[in-house]
Image 1 (cartoon, rainbow, N blue to C red):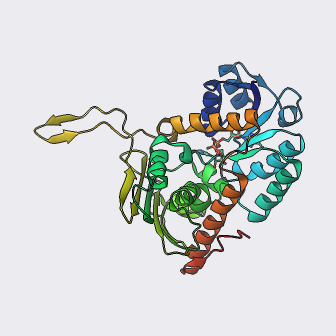
Image 2: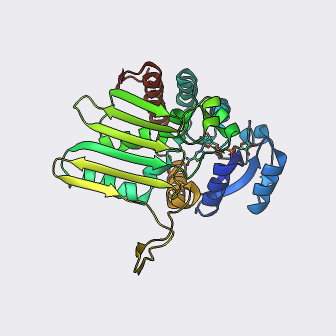
Image 3: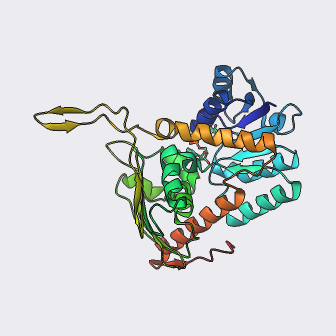
Length: 335
Ligand SMILES: NC(=O)c1ccc[n+]([C@@H]2O[C@H](COP(=O)([O-])OP(=O)(O)OC[C@H]3O[C@@H](n4cnc5c(N)ncnc54)[C@H](O)[C@@H]3O)[C@@H](O)[C@H]2O)c1
């Protein structure tokens, strides 16, 4: 069975998913829609797909699943329309910036029985998965402290930032999900300190470009997240999990494993520069998991509730930034 896919949004991440769909057995990119015709035309031509309107994809009989890869503020409406049209849905993170809108769209997904997977691609990174396997296998004992370092090589355009919902809901949301993935217990307390250190224009959005977040779970497990919109040495993506019987970590990925030693010391190639290169294996595994869920009728993971829980943590961090205090989160009821 081949899943026929329509892509809604042909921007940065839309192109990544089109590439991943092309590389996935049992999946075919049938049509592309974008608010900018030239963007849709160019991506569709690259993949021998058709250009259609959003309605022409969501309402079409020859489309089984949609990929929602348009800006965040369009996701909730597209989820609702796609679920009502009986499509399986892959939606990029975050589902929306408003918790109520997320809840409302998830209610429609539940009512219609639609399949919905949320794009927390880092769960599919082979390195991070290997760390999780060590935790699950009991190799490091009980998880006590998680450290997540996630720094972009440079900030996105100000126009992107203005629609993004801010650093915590746009970028740190990946790390909130990764924290949940690794801690094995829902965080119940969040505290955050943020600054503008990279580009003063970001303060005018308004947004921050650097943040340090601490999470604590009911049993006392801790997680520290360090985010920056700048890393002059490349895309810095590392995790470390400290447990009662050991430690597991995943290091950065380099452009190659070649290392040169001279009288000046050891020299390594640059880091893989950004998400397209660094996480391509994760995007491929993510799309394969979605297609597998749709073809077998099994529930996909991460779910809409995972999307909601990460947003609840992001909202708590925003509140902590505003008040200068740590904020309690009810891990069982993300209301
Ligand atoms: N998982 C990841 O690694 C990852 C990485 C980047 C972005 N994202 C998420 O993906 C989404 C898109 O981000 P991006 O960086 O690709 O943005 P982008 O601005 O590069 O692309 C968005 C595209 O959507 C189009 N568009 C705008 N309004 C539309 C509409 N109403 N219908 C259809 N198309 C529309 C734009 O013309 C543009 O081509 C965001 O929600 C972002 O948070 C996820």
